[in-house]
Amino acid sequence: MNILDENAPEDQRSLLQSWRIPIHQIGFDVGRKGMKDEEIIRFLHQLRDATFFTRDLGFCDRKLCHPRYCLVCLAVGKDEVAVFVRRVLRHPELDTKAKRMDTMIRVSHAGFSIWRRNVQKEVYINW
Image (cartoon, rainbow, N blue to C red; front, side):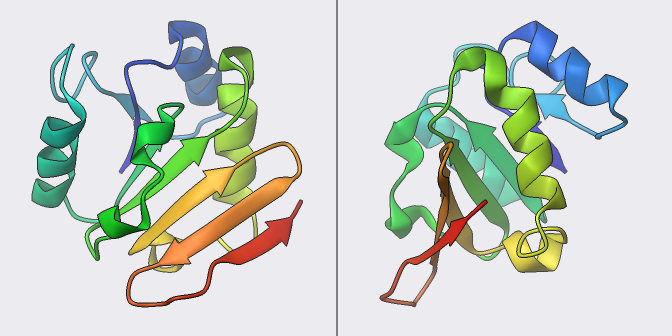
């Protein structure tokens, strides 16, 4: 399940859906509006194989890595969310749930860094 934080604009969710990328959004069709970061983490623990996309860089903490989900922190503009969600989901290093689970990924225009649970070294990949 791909989930957008509620901080992503409605038009970005609609754009992803128009590209046939299955996506849910906090406060729209999963969870509730105004969920605190800790509540979102507890919510993700209840799911299986969720990939959570957010522009809230407070989620960029490798201690949050968990086998049940993937956190993707998007360090991009609010009008670029859909493009970068699609880039992440289509990248050969991240194109399956199995490759994404148990990771925290920080995405920028230059590329992305991946932290995996119980691994001390961050991996950086250019687009």
